[in-house]
Length: 109
Image (cartoon, rainbow, N blue to C red; front, side):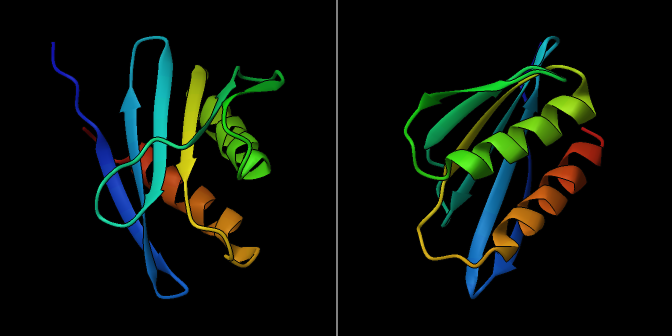
């Protein structure tokens, strides 16, 4: 057995944003970060069709819940989503990251 993250990136407002997705048998882990090195940030757990729970941190809470709902709905599995992003992005960040995670999840491993 091997674990492999699928990774994608997008530029928004002059900064590179990254997404890494790891799919397990019963869950999907999605990390979103700014800069070159992955970082753990505010973390949200979401079950498909159910409420989410904030596990760590409080920054980007709404964004984490939105991304978690998308990942859980698309995969049909528990999603764990971490966001480590600087503040000051426009409202376009939500749509941009939703499109990025969709693209990364659709890639074949």
